[in-house]
Image (cartoon, rainbow, N blue to C red):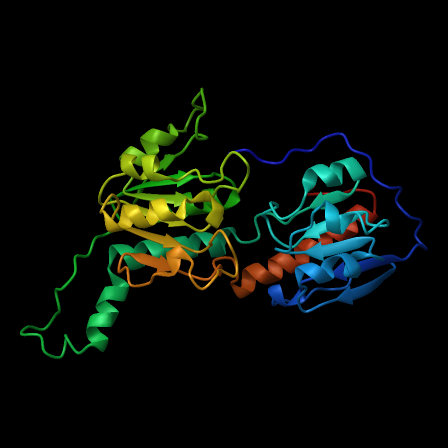
Length: 334
């Protein structure tokens, strides 16, 4: 999958040790963890949340901004003349106009690897819930069907093991690698996907179409880029096994929503678990919020928010700020 890469870029001069940085945290309540204060002179301004029409004004005097999912485009950034660093409190970077930042000399960094355990465990949970028909059995118990069963157990839905099944992983960064380790730990056979449309297949990888054809479960961990947006549509679902599951704990924009719903309703695949949607928070009529489908589980973008992951994220954000101010920037996207 396409990933950001460091390019030659200029940044405003590093200030002297006596200079005061103004740090503006636009979305403090999106991360429930302790942010230690950086070890350099600074003013810290934080907002519980920010609406789109408030961003430009709140950035006006910032030299460093911490953001999460707010869109930071040319319109907002052009009104922050002293801005030197955008520290994204997440791994995904599609919310920031990187090209404009490169042109302006604004450094952009993100956090990496902090949620590898949390997201991969969440993906595994979705796999287990769907393969074991967890929600259907819970509904049966709540409806009193077990109490009226003629035998000691209720056999109303099929259950399948993960062991011995084939797990296809699309996106093999830190989270994809953690997913591979979890899959192996429960006895799954692994297929690591090559980039979609790649002309050459790297050693240890399998072509994207072959991963779809051979996998019992496809778990998506790719970044959202121009190349990956909408990468799962009708033609991809038609390649998959009819008994296969699709798990997406990456970005909602990787999926074509209507195509996924058609695939579920028509039985092209047997189920799906998603933790992100293309618009968040989603509108009331979002097509994937039709939870009447027994083979669709939607969770509200919480795969990354274990207590441990959020604290690791908070610590890494401050590490990034301190590294930048000391003249040794890290995790750069620009």
